[in-house]
Image (tube, rainbow, N blue to C red; front, side):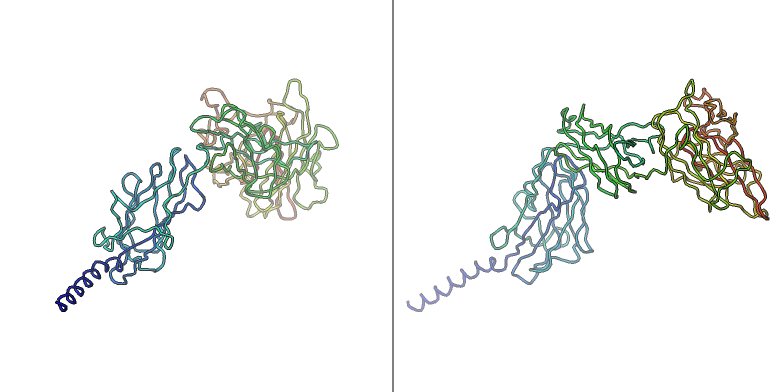
Length: 491
């Protein structure tokens, strides 16, 4: 009897040990979800990561080779990338899940973390609670490459914690620039105020920068503050705060108070994320101001009273500007206008920009170009090319017939009807309906306005264009009347 008891005890011990073995050899894993920048409602292009750790004690066939991950309600997966290489990731069920299969660098017990990086869209009602690798309560993690084999069990304990939530917080809405800022001159309050608008150098007068703000899919309530700040470039701004009206904030007093290039503005308001970022623009130093009378009516080193013009000591290349009366009836003159004039001797080109401050200005400039060898002169039979209504940098394409190609930002300069910077609209010729003006890709160079009927006048014309010999070289000079910011280039 005693022997029988011993055998019974031995049998029960083996049986209990057998039942205990699966726990010791159980295949288990942790899942830790994270949104590195947080999640906000109503936005796309947000990042979420899923980190898988195999914490199985069994060192046998305990490598994870396929996984199914399911997103919480209101979150849609739009892209998924697994750390390492050698895997297949497919987004399933309209973006509510992602399936990982054929993982060639399998997740081994207590080995490196396997990280899945996802791009997601979040609805206004999403909470981000409850990422899971279970379907109907069954774990969807396998040691087989094609969602087959033995499954792994999810664990979340004090010793081996898991995090399955990516909380969504913030206001559901959108913020975006409607009217983008364009390059302008730096202001020096209170005397010199040059607004940042939608047109370069505010010429012609542009619209104010505006930002659209929605909250809960409706225009933001009137009076919601929107703020602009510089997020790229060295420039600085003033008057970058405005309240919404009808969901739009209008920055009518926005100015640049420090120069910079490739500046960008960030708009924030209403607690909406992400913030909006503007297109790049520059804040440019003022080279000078032009008046209709001395001492600032003439700028530059040329004596424009002579033909050809003569330089006053700046070498073989020089220029001069002369401001005429505004094109009003009768002619008048308003505030001094800021300008920059850039002469590129190597390319025989020049660019004039001004903020006309809303005035119909007229400016004459004369350029004495760098001399060139006579034998290589290719310009004698061609008109100077001009440009208006285009922001620098200007696209130049040479053409053997017209000097400048139709696809470029230039057209051959037309001859002025009057040699008079004070002549108003009567100075400018009507654009002819011939090549390269006919059906030009730039509408400001076409013979007719948008109605296809009304003739259109040029905004820049050539008053004089000549040449003179210079010790075996030929030197060209050009006199221009400009009623818009312009570029000039010799072919």
